[in-house]
Length: 419
Ligand SMILES: *Cc1c(COP(=O)(O)O)cnc(C)c1O
Ligand SMILES: [Zn+2]
Picture 1 (tube, protein in one colour):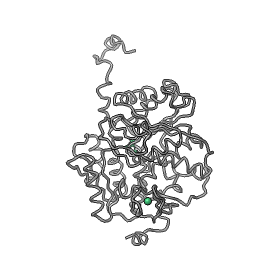
Picture 2 (tube, rainbow, N blue to C red):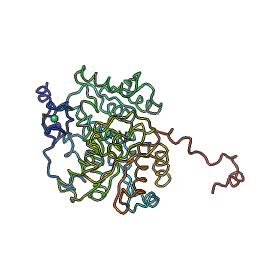
Picture 3 (cartoon, protein in one colour):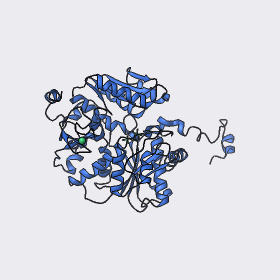
Picture 4 (cartoon, rainbow, N blue to C red):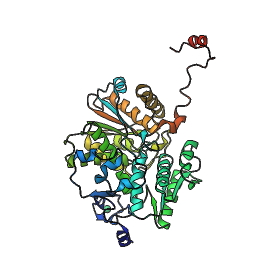
Protein backbone atom coordinates (compact mmCIF):
# COMPACT_ATOMS: atom_id res chain seq x y z
CA UNK A 1 0.00 0.00 0.00
CA UNK A 2 2.56 2.57 1.05
CA UNK A 3 4.94 1.89 -1.86
CA UNK A 4 1.97 2.27 -4.20
CA UNK A 5 1.30 5.66 -2.64
CA UNK A 6 4.94 6.64 -3.02
CA UNK A 7 4.92 5.61 -6.71
CA UNK A 8 1.85 7.70 -7.35
CA UNK A 9 3.22 10.80 -5.67
CA UNK A 10 4.75 13.31 -8.03
CA UNK A 11 7.98 14.93 -6.93
CA UNK A 12 7.34 17.85 -4.59
CA UNK A 13 3.68 16.86 -4.09
CA UNK A 14 3.96 18.01 -0.48
CA UNK A 15 6.38 20.89 -0.93
CA UNK A 16 9.05 20.97 1.79
CA UNK A 17 7.25 18.42 3.98
CA UNK A 18 9.44 15.33 4.37
CA UNK A 19 7.71 12.92 6.75
CA UNK A 20 4.91 12.20 9.17
CA UNK A 21 6.14 12.12 12.75
CA UNK A 22 4.37 10.85 15.85
CA UNK A 23 3.52 13.48 18.43
CA UNK A 24 3.75 10.88 21.20
CA UNK A 25 6.79 8.68 20.49
CA UNK A 26 8.54 10.66 17.75
CA UNK A 27 8.68 7.74 15.28
CA UNK A 28 8.60 8.91 11.67
CA UNK A 29 6.94 7.41 8.62
CA UNK A 30 6.61 8.34 4.97
CA UNK A 31 4.09 10.86 3.73
CA UNK A 32 0.78 9.31 2.67
CA UNK A 33 -2.87 9.00 3.72
CA UNK A 34 -1.93 8.08 7.27
CA UNK A 35 -3.01 9.65 10.53
CA UNK A 36 -1.98 7.23 13.29
CA UNK A 37 1.51 6.11 14.32
CA UNK A 38 2.28 2.52 13.33
CA UNK A 39 4.27 2.11 16.58
CA UNK A 40 1.92 3.55 19.21
CA UNK A 41 -1.26 4.78 17.39
CA UNK A 42 -0.39 8.36 18.45
CA UNK A 43 -1.46 11.27 16.21
CA UNK A 44 0.84 12.14 13.30
CA UNK A 45 2.20 15.56 12.48
CA UNK A 46 3.90 16.90 9.35
CA UNK A 47 7.63 17.58 9.61
CA UNK A 48 9.62 19.69 7.19
CA UNK A 49 13.02 20.25 5.76
CA UNK A 50 12.65 23.97 6.47
CA UNK A 51 13.63 26.19 3.54
CA UNK A 52 15.41 29.50 3.91
CA UNK A 53 12.91 32.19 2.98
CA UNK A 54 12.69 35.94 3.45
CA UNK A 55 9.87 38.28 4.38
CA UNK A 56 10.13 39.82 0.90
CA UNK A 57 9.57 36.46 -0.80
CA UNK A 58 6.44 35.87 1.24
CA UNK A 59 5.17 39.42 0.70
CA UNK A 60 5.51 38.94 -3.08
CA UNK A 61 3.12 35.97 -2.96
CA UNK A 62 -0.65 35.93 -3.53
CA UNK A 63 -3.02 37.58 -1.03
CA UNK A 64 -4.19 34.23 0.34
CA UNK A 65 -2.71 31.31 2.32
CA UNK A 66 -0.59 30.14 -0.63
CA UNK A 67 1.87 32.98 0.08
CA UNK A 68 3.09 30.59 2.82
CA UNK A 69 3.40 27.60 0.45
CA UNK A 70 7.03 26.86 1.45
CA UNK A 71 5.78 26.19 5.01
CA UNK A 72 2.79 24.04 4.03
CA UNK A 73 2.53 20.42 2.77
CA UNK A 74 1.47 21.58 -0.70
CA UNK A 75 3.33 21.73 -4.05
CA UNK A 76 5.06 24.88 -5.33
CA UNK A 77 2.50 25.17 -8.16
CA UNK A 78 -0.45 25.01 -5.75
CA UNK A 79 -1.87 28.35 -6.92
CA UNK A 80 -2.56 26.84 -10.36
CA UNK A 81 -5.05 24.23 -9.09
CA UNK A 82 -8.63 25.38 -8.46
CA UNK A 83 -9.20 25.74 -4.73
CA UNK A 84 -11.01 28.26 -2.54
CA UNK A 85 -8.02 30.59 -2.00
CA UNK A 86 -8.81 31.39 1.64
CA UNK A 87 -6.85 33.56 4.03
CA UNK A 88 -5.23 36.95 4.33
CA UNK A 89 -8.32 38.04 6.18
CA UNK A 90 -8.32 41.41 7.90
CA UNK A 91 -6.60 42.14 11.19
CA UNK A 92 -8.42 45.12 12.64
CA UNK A 93 -7.22 47.46 15.34
CA UNK A 94 -10.01 47.21 17.92
CA UNK A 95 -9.60 50.51 19.76
CA UNK A 96 -13.25 50.77 20.86
CA UNK A 97 -13.41 47.24 22.23
CA UNK A 98 -10.01 47.78 23.83
CA UNK A 99 -11.26 50.93 25.60
CA UNK A 100 -14.35 49.04 26.79
CA UNK A 101 -12.24 46.23 28.26
CA UNK A 102 -9.30 48.36 29.40
CA UNK A 103 -6.88 46.70 26.97
CA UNK A 104 -4.47 49.24 25.48
CA UNK A 105 -3.43 47.50 22.26
CA UNK A 106 -6.06 45.11 20.93
CA UNK A 107 -6.57 43.58 17.48
CA UNK A 108 -9.28 41.27 16.10
CA UNK A 109 -8.25 38.69 13.49
CA UNK A 110 -11.52 38.40 11.58
CA UNK A 111 -11.74 35.06 9.79
CA UNK A 112 -15.41 35.50 8.90
CA UNK A 113 -14.06 36.98 5.65
CA UNK A 114 -13.07 33.58 4.25
CA UNK A 115 -14.88 32.12 1.20
CA UNK A 116 -17.44 30.14 3.22
CA UNK A 117 -17.29 32.50 6.20
CA UNK A 118 -15.27 30.55 8.73
CA UNK A 119 -11.65 29.63 9.44
CA UNK A 120 -12.39 26.08 8.19
CA UNK A 121 -11.61 27.15 4.60
CA UNK A 122 -7.92 27.28 5.59
CA UNK A 123 -7.69 23.68 6.76
CA UNK A 124 -9.89 22.36 3.97
CA UNK A 125 -7.79 24.03 1.23
CA UNK A 126 -4.67 22.22 2.46
CA UNK A 127 -6.59 18.93 2.86
CA UNK A 128 -7.89 19.28 -0.70
CA UNK A 129 -4.35 19.64 -2.02
CA UNK A 130 -3.32 16.48 -0.13
CA UNK A 131 -6.35 14.58 -1.45
CA UNK A 132 -5.48 15.63 -4.98
CA UNK A 133 -1.80 14.71 -4.70
CA UNK A 134 -2.68 11.35 -3.13
CA UNK A 135 -4.95 10.61 -6.08
CA UNK A 136 -8.09 10.40 -3.91
CA UNK A 137 -11.29 9.67 -5.81
CA UNK A 138 -13.66 11.19 -3.28
CA UNK A 139 -13.42 14.23 -0.99
CA UNK A 140 -15.47 13.94 2.20
CA UNK A 141 -16.10 14.88 5.83
CA UNK A 142 -18.40 14.36 8.78
CA UNK A 143 -19.50 17.77 10.09
CA UNK A 144 -22.01 19.81 12.03
CA UNK A 145 -21.71 22.94 9.93
CA UNK A 146 -18.72 25.09 9.09
CA UNK A 147 -16.60 22.17 7.91
CA UNK A 148 -19.47 20.90 5.73
CA UNK A 149 -19.75 24.32 4.06
CA UNK A 150 -16.00 24.52 3.41
CA UNK A 151 -15.61 20.95 2.10
CA UNK A 152 -18.66 21.17 -0.18
CA UNK A 153 -17.46 24.47 -1.67
CA UNK A 154 -13.83 23.36 -2.15
CA UNK A 155 -14.92 20.06 -3.73
CA UNK A 156 -17.13 21.95 -6.16
CA UNK A 157 -14.29 24.30 -7.15
CA UNK A 158 -11.94 21.33 -7.59
CA UNK A 159 -14.43 19.22 -9.56
CA UNK A 160 -13.87 16.22 -7.29
CA UNK A 161 -16.87 14.08 -6.21
CA UNK A 162 -17.64 15.35 -2.71
CA UNK A 163 -19.71 13.63 -0.03
CA UNK A 164 -20.61 15.51 3.11
CA UNK A 165 -22.16 13.75 6.12
CA UNK A 166 -24.25 15.71 8.64
CA UNK A 167 -26.64 14.85 11.48
CA UNK A 168 -30.24 14.83 10.15
CA UNK A 169 -31.50 17.54 12.50
CA UNK A 170 -29.10 20.39 11.66
CA UNK A 171 -30.26 24.01 11.43
CA UNK A 172 -31.53 24.98 7.97
CA UNK A 173 -28.87 27.67 7.21
CA UNK A 174 -26.08 25.12 7.66
CA UNK A 175 -27.85 22.51 5.51
CA UNK A 176 -28.57 24.98 2.69
CA UNK A 177 -25.07 26.50 2.77
CA UNK A 178 -23.67 23.00 2.16
CA UNK A 179 -26.30 21.57 -0.19
CA UNK A 180 -25.98 24.56 -2.52
CA UNK A 181 -22.52 23.27 -3.55
CA UNK A 182 -23.14 19.51 -3.81
CA UNK A 183 -25.92 17.01 -4.52
CA UNK A 184 -24.10 14.49 -2.34
CA UNK A 185 -25.04 15.85 1.08
CA UNK A 186 -26.01 12.92 3.31
CA UNK A 187 -28.15 13.45 6.42
CA UNK A 188 -27.59 10.66 8.93
CA UNK A 189 -30.21 9.67 11.50
CA UNK A 190 -28.14 10.13 14.64
CA UNK A 191 -25.98 12.73 16.38
CA UNK A 192 -22.51 14.01 15.42
CA UNK A 193 -20.79 11.05 17.14
CA UNK A 194 -22.83 8.63 15.01
CA UNK A 195 -21.91 10.57 11.87
CA UNK A 196 -18.25 10.49 12.84
CA UNK A 197 -18.33 6.75 13.47
CA UNK A 198 -19.93 6.16 10.07
CA UNK A 199 -17.21 8.28 8.40
CA UNK A 200 -14.46 6.23 10.05
CA UNK A 201 -16.18 3.02 8.92
CA UNK A 202 -16.41 4.22 5.32
CA UNK A 203 -12.77 5.40 5.41
CA UNK A 204 -11.80 1.88 6.47
CA UNK A 205 -13.94 0.09 3.85
CA UNK A 206 -13.46 2.27 0.79
CA UNK A 207 -10.16 2.90 -0.93
CA UNK A 208 -9.34 6.38 -2.15
CA UNK A 209 -11.63 8.45 0.03
CA UNK A 210 -10.06 11.53 1.61
CA UNK A 211 -11.97 12.44 4.78
CA UNK A 212 -10.46 15.83 5.60
CA UNK A 213 -10.62 15.49 9.39
CA UNK A 214 -10.01 11.73 9.57
CA UNK A 215 -7.44 10.14 7.26
CA UNK A 216 -5.85 13.35 5.92
CA UNK A 217 -6.03 15.13 9.29
CA UNK A 218 -2.25 15.76 9.57
CA UNK A 219 -2.39 17.85 6.35
CA UNK A 220 -5.68 19.51 7.35
CA UNK A 221 -4.19 20.68 10.65
CA UNK A 222 -1.33 22.50 8.92
CA UNK A 223 -3.82 24.92 7.35
CA UNK A 224 -4.38 26.48 10.78
CA UNK A 225 -0.76 27.61 10.91
CA UNK A 226 -1.60 30.29 8.35
CA UNK A 227 -3.59 32.17 11.01
CA UNK A 228 -0.40 32.55 13.03
CA UNK A 229 1.72 33.56 10.03
CA UNK A 230 -0.82 36.18 8.97
CA UNK A 231 -1.16 37.74 12.40
CA UNK A 232 2.63 38.10 12.67
CA UNK A 233 2.99 39.47 9.13
CA UNK A 234 0.07 41.90 9.51
CA UNK A 235 1.54 43.26 12.75
CA UNK A 236 4.71 44.13 10.81
CA UNK A 237 6.49 40.81 11.37
CA UNK A 238 6.30 40.24 15.06
CA UNK A 239 4.46 37.84 17.34
CA UNK A 240 1.83 39.44 19.59
CA UNK A 241 2.44 39.24 23.34
CA UNK A 242 -0.94 37.54 23.84
CA UNK A 243 -3.23 35.59 21.49
CA UNK A 244 -6.74 34.43 22.49
CA UNK A 245 -7.99 31.43 20.46
CA UNK A 246 -11.21 29.32 20.54
CA UNK A 247 -10.83 25.60 21.26
CA UNK A 248 -12.97 22.82 19.74
CA UNK A 249 -10.69 19.86 18.91
CA UNK A 250 -7.76 22.12 19.86
CA UNK A 251 -6.03 21.77 16.51
CA UNK A 252 -6.14 25.47 15.67
CA UNK A 253 -4.57 26.62 18.94
CA UNK A 254 -1.70 24.14 18.76
CA UNK A 255 -0.98 25.00 15.12
CA UNK A 256 -0.86 28.74 15.77
CA UNK A 257 1.83 27.99 18.33
CA UNK A 258 3.62 25.81 15.75
CA UNK A 259 3.47 28.75 13.31
CA UNK A 260 4.99 31.17 15.84
CA UNK A 261 7.79 28.66 16.57
CA UNK A 262 8.51 28.24 12.87
CA UNK A 263 8.67 32.00 12.27
CA UNK A 264 11.22 32.31 15.07
CA UNK A 265 13.23 29.36 13.81
CA UNK A 266 13.31 30.78 10.27
CA UNK A 267 14.42 34.19 11.54
CA UNK A 268 11.32 35.87 10.08
CA UNK A 269 10.47 37.35 13.49
CA UNK A 270 12.52 38.07 16.58
CA UNK A 271 12.43 35.48 19.32
CA UNK A 272 10.35 36.66 22.25
CA UNK A 273 8.11 35.26 24.98
CA UNK A 274 4.42 35.10 24.05
CA UNK A 275 1.32 33.78 25.81
CA UNK A 276 -1.48 31.75 24.22
CA UNK A 277 -4.95 31.62 25.81
CA UNK A 278 -7.72 29.11 25.02
CA UNK A 279 -11.46 29.86 25.02
CA UNK A 280 -14.32 27.38 25.49
CA UNK A 281 -18.06 27.52 26.19
CA UNK A 282 -18.97 26.34 29.70
CA UNK A 283 -21.40 23.79 28.20
CA UNK A 284 -18.46 22.09 26.48
CA UNK A 285 -15.34 22.98 28.43
CA UNK A 286 -13.34 19.78 29.01
CA UNK A 287 -10.00 21.51 28.32
CA UNK A 288 -10.72 24.50 30.58
CA UNK A 289 -11.76 22.06 33.31
CA UNK A 290 -8.53 20.06 32.98
CA UNK A 291 -6.54 23.31 33.03
CA UNK A 292 -8.22 24.44 36.26
CA UNK A 293 -7.75 21.03 37.88
CA UNK A 294 -4.10 20.89 36.89
CA UNK A 295 -4.67 17.63 34.97
CA UNK A 296 -2.79 16.42 31.88
CA UNK A 297 -5.67 14.31 30.61
CA UNK A 298 -8.92 15.74 29.32
CA UNK A 299 -12.10 14.02 30.55
CA UNK A 300 -14.75 13.83 27.77
CA UNK A 301 -18.06 15.64 28.31
CA UNK A 302 -21.47 15.64 26.64
CA UNK A 303 -21.77 19.09 24.94
CA UNK A 304 -24.67 21.40 25.76
CA UNK A 305 -24.06 24.93 24.44
CA UNK A 306 -25.20 27.34 21.73
CA UNK A 307 -21.57 27.43 20.52
CA UNK A 308 -22.10 24.37 18.31
CA UNK A 309 -18.99 24.90 16.18
CA UNK A 310 -16.92 24.40 19.35
CA UNK A 311 -19.01 21.53 20.73
CA UNK A 312 -16.51 18.68 20.67
CA UNK A 313 -16.81 16.77 23.92
CA UNK A 314 -13.72 14.64 23.38
CA UNK A 315 -11.13 16.97 21.82
CA UNK A 316 -8.34 15.11 20.00
CA UNK A 317 -5.77 17.85 20.65
CA UNK A 318 -6.91 18.70 24.18
CA UNK A 319 -3.72 17.51 25.94
CA UNK A 320 -1.55 19.38 23.43
CA UNK A 321 -3.56 22.56 24.07
CA UNK A 322 -2.76 22.17 27.79
CA UNK A 323 0.94 21.78 26.92
CA UNK A 324 1.05 24.94 24.79
CA UNK A 325 -0.95 27.07 27.20
CA UNK A 326 1.07 25.98 30.23
CA UNK A 327 4.41 26.35 28.41
CA UNK A 328 3.59 29.91 27.29
CA UNK A 329 2.04 31.06 30.57
CA UNK A 330 -1.53 31.37 29.28
CA UNK A 331 -4.90 30.18 30.60
CA UNK A 332 -7.81 28.09 29.23
CA UNK A 333 -11.09 29.59 30.44
CA UNK A 334 -14.79 29.32 29.64
CA UNK A 335 -17.92 31.47 29.54
CA UNK A 336 -21.59 30.49 29.70
CA UNK A 337 -24.12 30.91 26.88
CA UNK A 338 -25.40 34.26 28.18
CA UNK A 339 -21.82 35.60 28.16
CA UNK A 340 -21.40 34.19 24.62
CA UNK A 341 -24.43 36.22 23.48
CA UNK A 342 -23.08 39.31 25.24
CA UNK A 343 -19.70 38.74 23.57
CA UNK A 344 -21.33 38.71 20.12
CA UNK A 345 -23.21 41.93 20.92
CA UNK A 346 -20.16 43.64 22.42
CA UNK A 347 -17.97 42.99 19.36
CA UNK A 348 -20.74 44.08 16.98
CA UNK A 349 -21.50 47.30 18.88
CA UNK A 350 -17.89 48.32 19.39
CA UNK A 351 -16.21 47.21 16.16
CA UNK A 352 -18.91 46.49 13.57
CA UNK A 353 -17.94 42.82 13.41
CA UNK A 354 -20.75 40.24 13.61
CA UNK A 355 -19.25 37.07 15.05
CA UNK A 356 -20.74 33.61 15.20
CA UNK A 357 -21.10 31.95 18.58
CA UNK A 358 -17.46 30.79 18.54
CA UNK A 359 -16.44 34.47 18.31
CA UNK A 360 -18.79 35.28 21.18
CA UNK A 361 -16.98 32.64 23.24
CA UNK A 362 -13.59 34.16 22.50
CA UNK A 363 -14.67 37.75 23.19
CA UNK A 364 -16.41 36.60 26.39
CA UNK A 365 -13.25 34.87 27.59
CA UNK A 366 -11.12 37.89 26.64
CA UNK A 367 -13.36 40.08 28.81
CA UNK A 368 -13.24 37.63 31.72
CA UNK A 369 -9.43 37.34 31.56
CA UNK A 370 -8.98 41.11 31.34
CA UNK A 371 -11.22 41.64 34.39
CA UNK A 372 -9.56 38.93 36.45
CA UNK A 373 -6.07 40.16 35.64
CA UNK A 374 -5.08 36.82 34.09
CA UNK A 375 -4.42 38.74 30.88
CA UNK A 376 -1.95 41.64 30.86
CA UNK A 377 -4.06 44.60 29.72
CA UNK A 378 -0.99 46.66 28.83
CA UNK A 379 0.39 44.00 26.44
CA UNK A 380 -0.31 43.71 22.72
CA UNK A 381 -3.25 41.32 22.34
CA UNK A 382 -4.88 39.58 19.35
CA UNK A 383 -8.28 37.88 19.67
CA UNK A 384 -9.71 35.60 16.97
CA UNK A 385 -13.17 35.75 15.43
CA UNK A 386 -13.35 32.48 13.49
CA UNK A 387 -16.83 32.61 11.93
CA UNK A 388 -19.70 34.76 10.66
CA UNK A 389 -22.70 35.71 12.80
CA UNK A 390 -25.07 35.21 9.86
CA UNK A 391 -24.59 31.45 10.34
CA UNK A 392 -25.82 31.51 13.93
CA UNK A 393 -28.53 34.19 13.83
CA UNK A 394 -30.65 32.27 16.34
CA UNK A 395 -28.17 33.02 19.11
CA UNK A 396 -29.16 36.70 19.18
CA UNK A 397 -32.29 36.94 17.00
CA UNK A 398 -34.62 37.47 19.97
CA UNK A 399 -32.34 40.04 21.65
CA UNK A 400 -32.06 42.67 18.94
CA UNK A 401 -34.48 44.22 16.46
CA UNK A 402 -36.03 47.49 15.36
CA UNK A 403 -36.08 50.20 18.05
CA UNK A 404 -39.50 51.27 16.76
CA UNK A 405 -42.02 50.44 14.06
CA UNK A 406 -43.54 53.64 12.72
CA UNK A 407 -45.75 55.06 9.98
CA UNK A 408 -43.89 56.58 7.05
CA UNK A 409 -44.15 60.19 8.23
CA UNK A 410 -41.68 62.72 9.68
CA UNK A 411 -43.92 63.29 12.69
CA UNK A 412 -44.02 59.60 13.49
CA UNK A 413 -40.23 59.42 13.22
CA UNK A 414 -39.58 62.37 15.55
CA UNK A 415 -42.22 61.09 17.97
CA UNK A 416 -40.41 57.76 18.23
CA UNK A 417 -37.41 59.47 19.88
CA UNK A 418 -34.76 57.42 18.11
CA UNK A 419 -32.03 60.07 18.17
C1 LIG B 1 -13.86 24.34 13.94
C2 LIG B 1 -13.94 25.71 14.48
C3 LIG B 1 -13.06 26.19 15.48
C4 LIG B 1 -12.02 25.39 16.24
O1 LIG B 1 -11.39 24.39 15.63
P1 LIG B 1 -10.40 23.33 16.30
O2 LIG B 1 -9.22 23.43 15.44
O3 LIG B 1 -11.13 22.03 16.16
O4 LIG B 1 -10.14 23.68 17.72
C5 LIG B 1 -13.17 27.52 15.86
N1 LIG B 1 -14.09 28.33 15.33
C6 LIG B 1 -14.95 27.91 14.39
C7 LIG B 1 -15.96 28.89 13.87
C8 LIG B 1 -14.90 26.60 13.92
O5 LIG B 1 -15.78 26.22 12.98
ZN1 LIG C 1 4.09 6.86 18.05
